[in-house]
Length: 325
Image 1 (cartoon, one colour):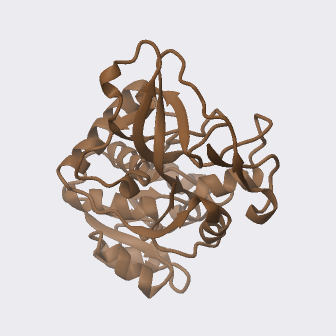
Image 2 (cartoon, helix red, strand yellow; image 1 turned 180 degrees about the horizontal axis):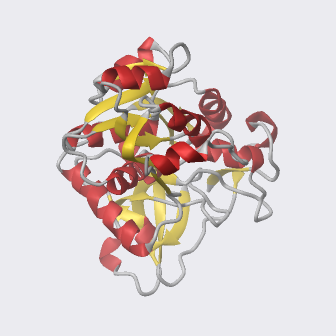
């Protein structure tokens, strides 16, 4: 089968190899999926750049969609021919979704509703699941004010939609007028240009000095520096799933303590079983009821994976980048 892999960390042009490898066979409790699409996420790029290899070679990408072509023992044979989307394909294992066939546990191949395309199915495993879990950790948002950092990003665009559906007044940080337009299409009421204006000052202006009730955050290294400046209200909550700086981050403790601030962190790859079951069910409900809008920014054939990784690395597009297998 055709597959892309790398044997060392580095730039896409220096590491990614397109070639042929053996088609894998499903073991007990596993399914083999003939992939139609593979999603390229920022975390896939970061892994290729710096995550230590846990195998002689790594096939990148965690997300994708396709059709179950073969099942292992213990799996209902009726699943053969089922349209599915996958999650955590390259988490804790070497074989991701940048290939024609993938074998994984049957729970990682989730039914893809008929009204959802394979291209959209490649946007679910990391971007939409992260947004759904973030909203779950926020609690009831009806009547609340919410700041979504990176509101035009793949996760942020989904999170803004879900927060607006939940009855929140949504604000978002963006880096350009183009991204502001995209964020507003998701239900963001006011956009804050974080490169040219003070986010805390703008938030306090929008909330009569109170700060927002909740922040859904993609970059704790930046957002943490605002917490002492009144961006979050007393007894407010910050829900965070990432940071542009992976190392230690200095924060001002006293404002968090004296304002009874709650901080919740999560890694979408590493949820409890109950959390995973819940968000998978919620996600398919959103798909089946057409309650969410997807943004496919660019599609590449597998042969152009280097260009796809370069585009994601540079933040070249607003929306999801998808490989067509």
